[in-house]
Amino acid sequence: MKKAALLFAAVPVAVTAAVYFLGPASSDSSPQDRAAVEQLARDQAKAKAEGDAAAAERAADDKLIASLPPGLAAPAKKELAHQIVSTAAISSLDWRRSYAAIEDHGNGQGYTAGIVGFCTGTHDLLVLVENYTKAHPDNGLARYLPALRKVDGTDSHEGLDPGFTAAWKAEAKVPAFRAAQDAERDEVYFDPAVRLAKLDGLGTLGQFVYYDAMLYHGPDTSPSGFYGMRERALEKAELPSEGGTEREFLDAFLDVRREAMLAKKPDTDTSRIDTTQRRFLNEGNLDLKTPLQWEMYGDTFKVP
Picture 1 (cartoon, rainbow, N blue to C red):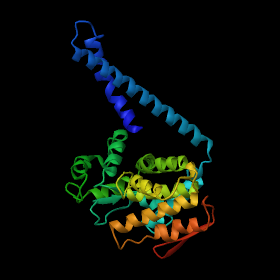
Picture 2 (picture 1 turned 120 degrees about the vertical axis):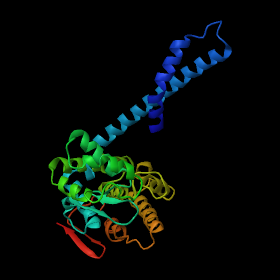
Picture 3 (picture 1 turned 90 degrees about the vertical axis):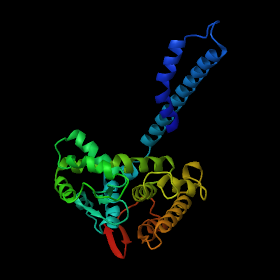
Picture 4 (picture 1 turned 180 degrees about the horizontal axis):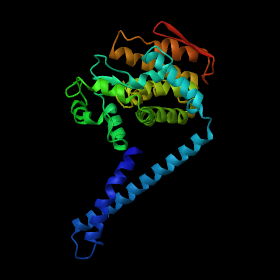
C-alpha cells in the first residue's frame, strides 16, 4: 500500500495539469490526444482509489490496535525491552548509559553510537543529527553534518576525527539530545515493530522479538533484513492473525533470524536468541511476565 500512496502523491499535479490544459476530448482533437487524456483520467482515478483504500486500511488497523492490550508499549514492558537489548549491547541493564556510547567496532559501519547503535555508515545517525539540528541549530554536533553526509554509506571517519566522539559524548549530557535519541528509536524501530507484531497477532514476547530483530538487522527487505526474514518465516509457519499459533510462528522466525546472523558472520554469538528469546518462548512466557531471567554471552541477568 505504500507504493500506492506514493503514486497518488506524485500523480495528481501532472494529471490535473494535463486534463486542464488539454480539456475534454473534443471532436477536433487527435485520437492520440483523446486517448492520452482518457488514460490520465483513469490513472488519476486509480491512484485516488488506491490512496483511499490505503487510508481506510490504516484506519482499520489503527482501530484494531487501539482495541488491543498495550503489550510491549506499556511503560514497564518498554523499559524491560530496553533492558534486555542493553544486556546484548553493553552487558548491563542500565540502557541509559548508552546515550553517550560511541565506538567504531570495525564492522564496516563507521562509528556506532547511542541507545540503539546509530551508525555513521548506515544513514540513521545522520538522520538523527539532522532532525535534532532542525530543533536545536546551535547543538555541538551540527558542525559535523557536512562530514556525516559525506561519509554516509561508508566506514570512513573523514571530517569526523578527532573531535566527533568527544562532541557526541558532550551532547549526550543534554536532555534534549537524549530525548531526540528516544524519539528516533521509537519512530524508526520500536513503534513499527510493535505495530506490525500486533497486527500479526503476536503478544508481548513476539513484539519484543520483532523489535530486537528490527534493531539488529535493520528495517529493510533484504534476506537478512527484518522484513525479508519475516517473509521467510511466513514460508514456514502461519501468522497467529491468520490461524497459526504464536509458538510455531515465533519458533520459525527465530530459526530464520539465527540463520541470518550466522550467514553474515559464522562465529556470531547468538545468545540473544538461544539463551534469551528462545528461553522465554520455551518457558511459555508469551507475555514477558516478570520476574525474568536470561543469559547473554555467558552472563546471567535478572529483572524482579
